[in-house]
Length: 113
Ligand code: AMP
Ligand code: ZN
Image 1 (tube, rainbow, N blue to C red):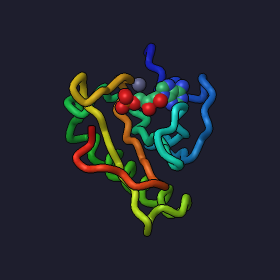
Image 2: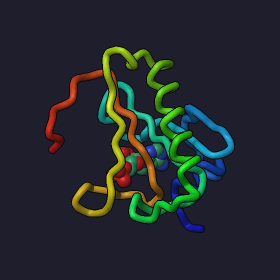
Image 3: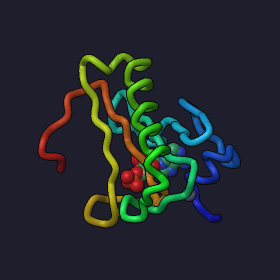
Image 4: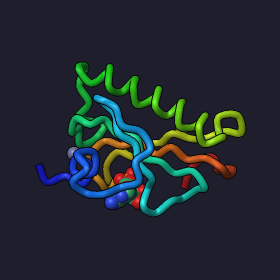
């Protein structure tokens, strides 16, 4: 499949790996928007949140467990962090393999721009 994040998870394209298990892969965002900016993905190709299926629930909960661990490891668990998934055009999704941005290390505005 011609998918950037599938290739990154398969290590066919290099990335700065943060977490790697059977279901979940995490790596540094190439264009960080905060001192901590890690992308967490299910290894299974799911294009957008709209395409999520019931069978993906286990992998999705592992995504959040990885987020919790990474936030702790990076020292932002207590200060605060944000986990964001952009879905389709209005949210600004540019890579169509479901991914969760873990952002931390600075204050974020609300509502988001
Ligand atoms: P989104 O706009 O939510 O689809 O986010 C896509 C993210 O992927 C952006 O934050 C990009 O900086 C990031 N990105 C694109 N290509 C790479 C890459 N090769 N390695 C790491 N992050 C990437
Ligand atoms: Zn993919």
